[in-house]
Image (cartoon, rainbow, N blue to C red; front, top):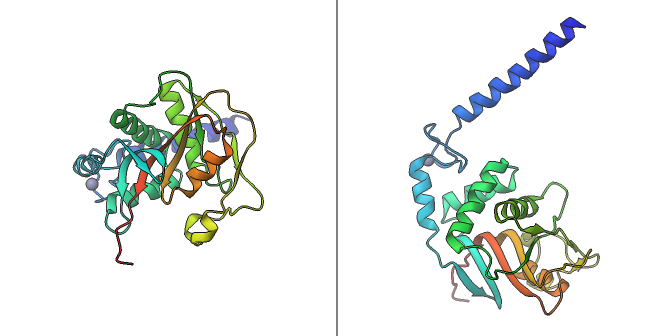
Length: 227
Ligand SMILES: [Zn+2]
C-alpha cells in the first residue's frame, strides 16, 4: 500500500518536472530559439514579426460577408502564419489559443453590436478537429459571451475538407441548426476563412433576419492569377 503511494507520488512529480522543463525550454516554433518563448509559441523577435502581419484591415466585406481576421495569410509566402495555423490545428494549449484570441479582440475591438451576441463555432468535420470550438470558447470566456455549438454539417452535403473539394462541390456544403439561437446577433467563428463557402453554409442554416459576422484568426488571401 505504502509502496504504491510512493510510486504514485513519484509519477506525479515526474510529470510536473517534465511539464516545467517543457515550459522552460519551449523553443520558438519559427526560429527554434529557446529564450523568452511565451504562450504565443514565438520568441520575442518572431512575435514582433508576427504582429507586423496583423496590420491588415480590421473588417472586410469578403464574398458578401462581413469578416474580421487577425491576419491575412498567403500560403507558401507567410511562414510564421503557416506554422501558427498548424499549431492551432494540432491541439496547442488553451493559453496559446487564448493569446491569439486576445490579440484578435484587441485588433478588431470585439463584437459590432453592443446588445447580446451569440458566438457560433464552425462545426467539427471529425471529433479530432475541434479547433473552431476551442477558439469560440476562448472568445466567449474573454468577452463573457454565450457560445452555442448549434450547427452541424448536413448529410448529403459535402463534408470533406475544403482542399479535397472542387469548385462545384464547395457550393454544395450544407449545414443545419441543431438548436435554435436566441440572439439576433451571431458571430460565426472559424480558424481560417478560405473561400467563404463554409461561412455561407452557416449563414444559410441560421435565421435570415439575424446579424451575421465572421471571425477568423487567418484570412487566406488568394494571389491574383492571370486566368
Ligand atoms: Zn523565433
